[in-house]
Amino acid sequence: MIWNESIECIDRDALKTIQSIRLKKIVEHIYHNTPFYRKKMQELGITPDDIESIDDIIKLPFTNKSDLRDNYPFGLCAVPMSQIVRVHASSGTTGKPTVVGYTRKDLSSWTECLARAFTSYGASNADVFQISYGYGLFTGGLGAHQGAEKIGASVIPMSSGNTEKQITLMHDFGSTVLCCTPSYALYLADVIKDSGLNINDLKLKVGVFGAEPWTENMRKEIEEKLGIKAFDIYGLSEIAGPGVGYECECQDGTHLNEDHFFPEIINPETNRPVESGEIGELVFTHLTKEGMPLLRYRTKDLTKLNYAKCKCGRTLVRMDRILGRCDDMLIIRGVNVFPTQIESVILELEEFEPHYLLIVDRKNNTDTMELQVEVREQFYSDEMKQMLILKKKLTARLQSVLGLGVDVKLVEPRTIERSTGKAKRVIDNRKL
Image 1 (cartoon, rainbow, N blue to C red):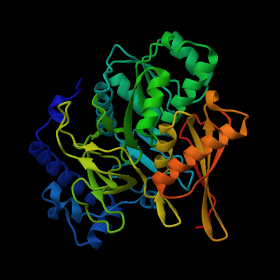
Image 2 (image 1 turned 180 degrees about the vertical axis):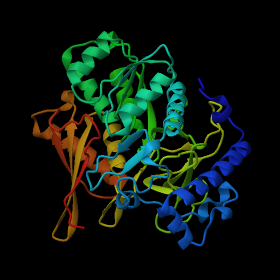
Image 3 (image 1 turned 180 degrees about the horizontal axis):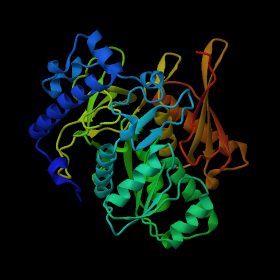
């Protein structure tokens, strides 16, 4: 199903025309209303008159997360606070939170993007959405909520946590769509199994999972355990929230709502655009946002783009799964390692649960990696010989994929801490 066929299946030349008109308009808006950007553009010798089409976007300055923190809280607003009707913010675990302001029109545009996403998953006004993302300053809960209401669905605003109650209401209220992080979906599946509830007694059919990277193997795990079709939803609070991108029924890449958020892929080292189809850092420019529009915001997410028409009929560009983040990439003894690579290996092997913790350290001037991973109940044994066979199997596979030795520690089921939000997978103890 398609929510807005005129845009989602638009001719790409027509889309480029829309993007060009909107870019010129947003640059004028920013230049005259955001002193931070006016100064940056003046330093580059650029005025709004230099922006004639979307191809001129490379003339514009980049924006980093540090710019949002340096202008905390509302220094990047392009409208008076009297026009800001909602504020969201990141968790701020690494410093001051990044704050985002929305006008009424901004909320409407964001909601439109979420309606496109949910419709692409096959959801409709006949569905019951259980929103198990956190509500509050985090964009996930309220974002998904407004998108579900937009398509006319019934909404259960559960928020995260309180897992036993989640399952009770999921059963009693007949939830058909679950929105949460993929790691929490797996935790829910485990608790449902422990409760003795038959998964077939639930009406769940679709899962909408985002807010953290996850792999194809993790998708299969979730779909098998919950008996649903699991879809990825992409977003970040600085750009809008969930709904910046979404999968369709083909599950062959994430369509980006590029009529609202223009994507580029750059080389994070040179800051130059990469060749078509190459992996690089994802960058977004707002094309319609009024409250706090950003130019060329560097997401730190590493991926690539595919402009070929999708089998579903949509022409909106497709983004590959996020390989990782520039700042999540671990350099171990000169080798680039992403946590998603390790997760993918774990999930290839039936003996292991998708719950792990990677501890990186430096001993005697040498980087070390310890991987704690849970063994599935049916494969866990007190027999040392059996555990040694499993350990060697996983170690060899990791060595093959990463080109590095990993110190594997097998642990009992349910011993690694679970999260109701974003899972903590890596601890880096090195003083870098």
